[in-house]
Image 1 (tube, rainbow, N blue to C red):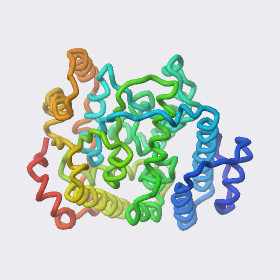
Image 2: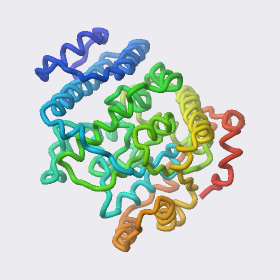
Image 3: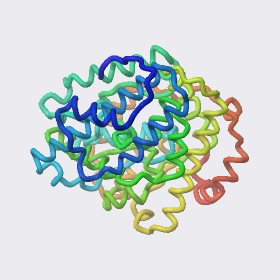
Amino acid sequence: MADLVESTDSLNETLLLAEACKATGFSDFGEDRSWGVGLAKFIEATEAMNPPPVLRADVRQRIRHHLETRLRLVQDAKAHPEIVAQTIDRPLVVCGLPRTGTTIMYDLLTRDPKARAPREWEWFIPWPAPEQATFNSDPRIGAVTAMMENWLAHAPELRAIQRFDCTQPGECNHGMSHHFAGTNFWAELGVPKHAQWVIDEIPEGLYLTHKRLLQQFQWKGPKGRWMLKSPNHLFDLAGLINAYPDACLIWTHRDPVSTFSSLASMVYAFQKAVGSTQTKTAIGAQVVNLWVEAMGRATRIRASRPDVEARIIDLSHASVVHDPIGAVRKVYARFDIPFTQDHETAIRLFLAESPSRLGTHKHSAEEFGIDAGEVHRRLADYYRQFGHLLAKA
């Protein structure tokens, strides 16, 4: 990723597209251009903030990176049609709200010797295709590590909130940024108008991009059953199942009021790292609006789509934290996957060596203006259906 070059010039979609074509020497963005909607929304949301030059430069660099990546992926597929002929078979997908035990559940699943999880560095920089022989020494690891260290230098409190190690399994929402969708742009840069678009619309073609990235990763990279994770899947469970009809979904549950304040605290730290001036209460309101929509949408889809409901197992945050091996056993039994002794041994070793962050992240709903009563009213259907899973760990 290139160094930022500050500019006061407004972002211009036509110019950005032309610059990406010039940089790569390619001009074919592929048949699917649905990602253009999110690109336009991202540019509009950034300019609506009257951003300082450094923030505008950050956005310009991100857009260029995603456009150049798309051009190169299209070129790869044209030169090697076997890439897009690959199937993505029966992935396991963790899709609970942020801060509900999704990361620990993901870590446990990916200890399976037969698992294949996309790494953080792959999601951030998917091209060129990762290769099995150099997977653990790929130079992109250093580039993404430097980016993460820069975040932590500006907001060291992030270290107590989540893991920063790009060699570990990564979240699908990083890949969704290549479609100019998902919540990452808002969480990291504070672009509320883009967040509102995520609330208002289900982006067309998102899972075409998602699948194309997985195909790129497994083409030359390590093989295995895909293990995936992102709370962003809650916004479109129907789209996820349409793309991967045999997917196995793990929905982790924790009281949304606690999750929302924890997430707001994390987002505040991220935005502080890039100089955002959004207040805690503004971020708290955006967190509630975004994830109430995600939870409501996912709950309604489960009720109306039996094929989606049939692909889900529900787990409480408490069960994942207090009986992690038992939680994995339940998942594997639910989806008729053998749980091996090698997997259990790997989980025990991982748990023994991994420091816990439980209790180290301090936050409160009041700090971010989150009204528990409002959350309960707006998610009444969710609490009615899943309230038995929300006891505190």
